[in-house]
Image 1 (cartoon, one colour):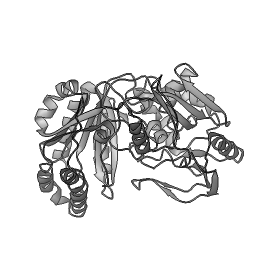
Image 2 (tube, rainbow, N blue to C red; image 1 turned 135 degrees about the horizontal axis):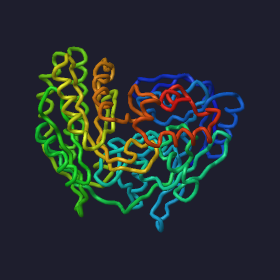
Image 3 (cartoon, rainbow, N blue to C red; image 1 turned 180 degrees about the vertical axis):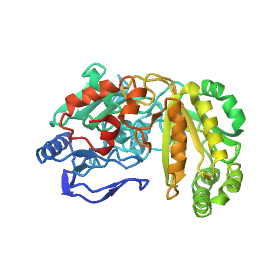
Image 4 (cartoon, one colour; image 1 turned 30 degrees about the horizontal axis):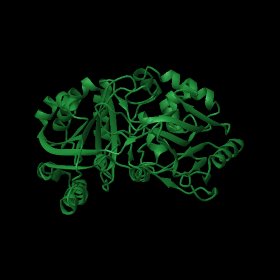
Length: 440
């Protein structure tokens, strides 16, 4: 951790997808937890609200503020590695990609990851970022302790033993309970994963979904709308040796096809929507079967250079296939032209108050649209299907749900809002998004 706190007049802020803009009064870049606490106290004295923003990968306005914007760029790095307890304590602004690389140098690893690693650790966990896993949950489920700066500038440490009621909620705190200054994660010895990527028909993957999810540590698939084609990915632990994709084949799959050609296809589809179905049939066959073995985070994550907007819902695991079939039927009977595949992942139940997997084994269905393409009619139709199955929207992705709905799908919703009333009665950390999803 280097540098000293800086404060400057606010500038217009825009998120990664371009779906949200805001103009804070001022921006503060603290270098220590003490400077962070001072910035929060000063903002409260000035009657200004406070939000922290990392890399802006949330599609919602969860980080937007007209008050003080905290940038955690100087709150980075590993504080401590405890090999006895197998934990790592890291500053809140540390990007996941830097944490992964630093852990690998120490022959350590997180247990599970999402499919990108650009986000800060606090931003990723506060919104419930997740990958896919039979037995291992979201990044937040790997938290063993955290530090929270509350509305009065106090530093609150929480874990299963210390302030456990705060720990239950703050692992996915939505930025509503305070500003996270440090996180302690469980880690394990560095391990290898073998990835097996394979095309599969829609009917086969949906018929075998339960079996595929049960047989593999990490299973996910993508369905390409306007086709019957899916691409499946099975990640399982391996004793090695490492056999990463070759430089050329890796570039062809991950850069040329998944980013370069995909960018061209989406740009064409945005301009001439009628081209999407025939192109989808060709594009969905372009990715061939491949198997490779590498250290875990390099298998979990992929480069994502094509910008998009996204909505994702967590459903009870047993409802996922029925919901996906309904989405497929909806697209096929509509005039919609969808150039982005639909992603399906899983997670075991966890005990985090407002986790999308709280208390139930879950499956995630994510719909995307290329940036700049009208998406509301598609997302609205998909959302109607998801909510009919008791779906919970991802906190950082586009949705239209409010507190009244969310109270009906989260049994512990009142527990979270009561804790918020205690920790932030003056709504120092409030904004319009939190008012909608949590109420006043």
